Amino acid sequence: MKTYTLVTINAIFAVVLATTACSGSKASKIKGEWRSKDNETILKITGKQFTMDTDSPIPEDYFMKGDTIYTSFQGNLPYTKFVVKAVDEHNLKLLYPDSVLVEFTK
Image (cartoon, rainbow, N blue to C red):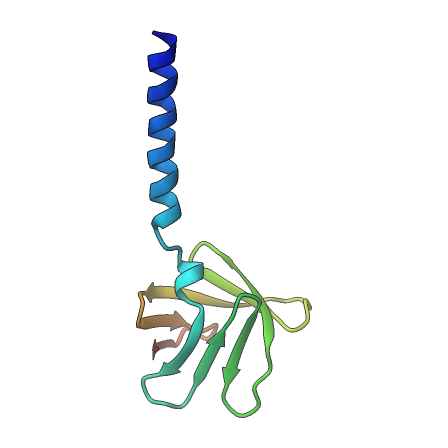
């Protein structure tokens, strides 16, 4: 009986682990090169840097907490906050710090 219980618990754990590992997080979906729908801004997001190519591109460090991207130039405070409203494989809706919603495509 103990063996059956242990095998069942391990099987359930394996299924839960596989399910969470296979589901893509927002952090992995946002990586890549994005273009705004009006073609004025190019947004490049790598594993460590967040760069907007407008007039003069300056790469910034970033981290994600929930649906929010926090950026800072070389770790300096205060952080600039961008909110991810929606993201999938080809579309990104990003709320800028000044509450302007910008749509990007890959």
